[in-house]
Length: 154
Image 1 (cartoon, rainbow, N blue to C red):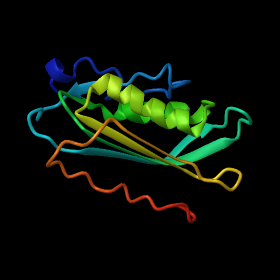
Image 2: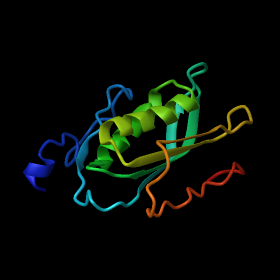
Image 3: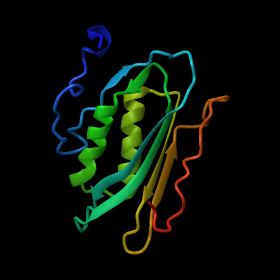
Image 4: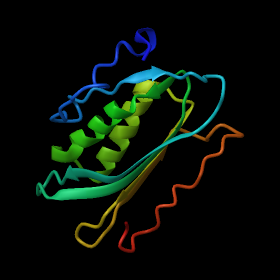
């Protein structure tokens, strides 16, 4: 690892505790080695968890995050820890999904980002939450998220 490029990372390469909350989580970025090339990056988190803010009951989701980077890439371990920090955090599905997008856009200033939050049913109703920053750049292959409507999702 080059100290010049990666020297500022605080979580990669060692043991890192799960942050107590999303507010305490540190998202880190690294320079995009191909900033002039437009390409898509996908992160899939099929076991995302948070807590219902009213009952404290666990909520589960399958998240799909797609982005076209500009000058920065999200460092994947910091993203994993950030997503894990929601595990004991009480918030509605809509907030969790859009807060993840907001933090990533704030950190990365990507050319484009979208998130699909496919939440498992609670009370018999699945709630799916979608957000994107605008139209994707022309010519970039953006695959479908391919998470089916709820039918025993898995």
